[in-house]
Length: 267
Image 1 (tube, rainbow, N blue to C red):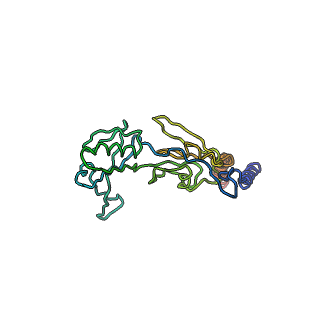
Image 2: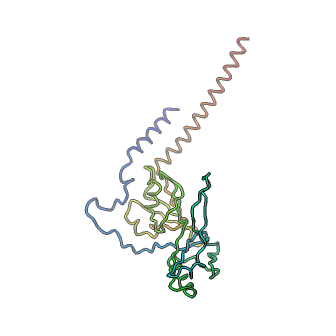
Image 3: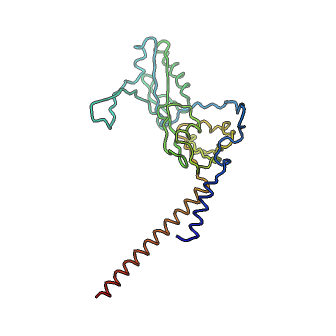
């Protein structure tokens, strides 16, 4: 490793260690003391049902027998890792097909894509009322998930129980950003009617709370880009690895030649 490469590595380490708070602090425009209101929570975060959603739909009534036909039977599930005979009860779900439909008992095919869970519950309640008195319907998306990638401590796909998920909560579930994460340029990618849309968010500004991307939708992807120091260090590491590999190859070749030379001289 040359003196020039050592100097470059030292400079990168110094830059990383001297990273100022204006690069890592969230919501820098919020005063350190006192209190206030950031924004009116006027955005509708209710998630709309999309194809490939798994829906649990439960129908109840003062007369359970009258709505029994509208509920899928409970099944027994045995975890694959279990070696003993042990099972747990699980509610079957409705998979929304690519056209946005489900097949519902008695009512048949229903188009549910584009509806919220509350809207679908009201639709089912109206239709089931023709068969049962005062039905109560609850609908929930069982596979609500987002992916958090890049410069976070625990990247991966996160499945959550709630349909109200903010970008901050998703980042928190991923163990927060690393010191190398670019906080003012977080990318959110969203599938809207078969097209990929994206928005860049600045976590250092309270304007984040006013963004329509503050509340995440199912299957959103959150990507945290590495900062310049991380990118520079990555390039250096690849160069250093190549140099070490090359040096190792040369040393091995010289060693082989030396061994052959010694063997010939001995003879």
